[in-house]
Length: 244
Image (cartoon, rainbow, N blue to C red; front, side, top):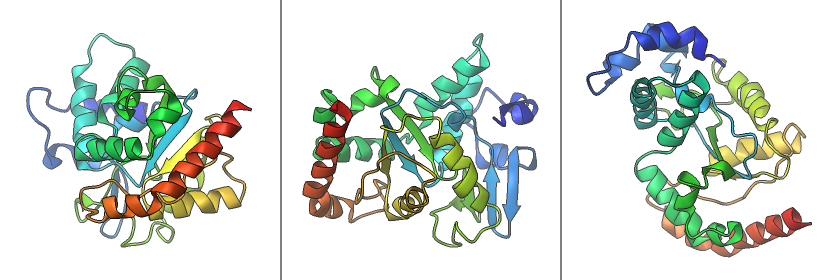
């Protein structure tokens, strides 16, 4: 974990105001940079739920997740560091419209039924013990100070990002049960996970064809409708294997 390296800078952040990019996209919180790309530390992806049976994987935390993570981390007082990291993970992961869309789309393909839940919203509430959330790029990456989408420049060809895809991310997944179902958000994430699985670097099964739930993906509902039957078949297969 990198938290100890960045705690001095975190402890200097203001706690009486809404944090801005001027507060957080600063040298003392920067992990590395390459041309117009920059990666910054954020505390919400440090905690790993090693008992999870579902893992949702995005490309990289966005600005809203980063901002929420810092504000919540700073608000948790009189707690152990690991408790603060756990609570920060729970509050910040896929926060905002992304989480709303994600819950709706996973309900649509029946994941809540497979898990015996009323709604996937339970995974982000009292059934959080079943869920792990993470990203291919564990820490927030920005391109020209905007959320990085994973495409331009390419993740695979970036000297800054490549180690996070092929070393840091696999090491995190290796802490999870082999039966844990990975849900990649979008084609780019699925592409990397498929590559790692083919190379036998990661063991877990993963869903194929789940669209990215971002509001920027205006075709997500159409894509979901097209893939729904196949996604449901994959869930049923995973559930059957889990029961054996």
